[in-house]
Length: 134
Image 1 (tube, rainbow, N blue to C red):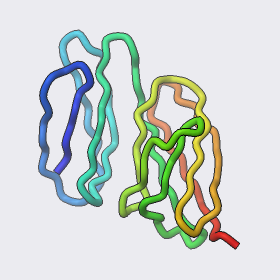
Image 2 (tube, rainbow, N blue to C red):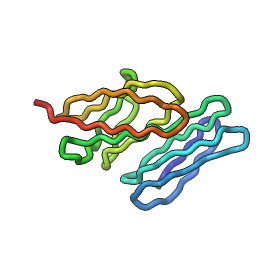
Image 3 (cartoon, rainbow, N blue to C red):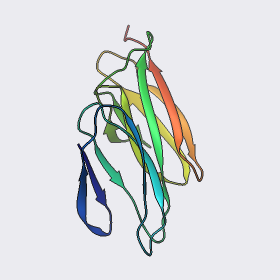
């Protein structure tokens, strides 16, 4: 089940969905159309921004360990502030306007990793591989 909330647009829409990945597009009269990729490993909350002035794009973050196994509950910070955690699949989505951002990810028992992402008129995919703490 996905919960969709639109900033500035009253109400929410619930959609039943099996486990998997889904691409959704959204539009409303007077707003800029937008799209997002949703991961249905658990019950994700997808905040999708439709705003007449700001355009937001999805930043899909995947966090793995050195054996390419997902790291659930890894935290993601943007410019020093925690903004999301990964789901059971090691995935999270941030919704950001155009710009350059420094993301740092970490998890219990793992070294933090920092990387830069550039959001520029399309979805961005960022993968972080964390090493075990020594």
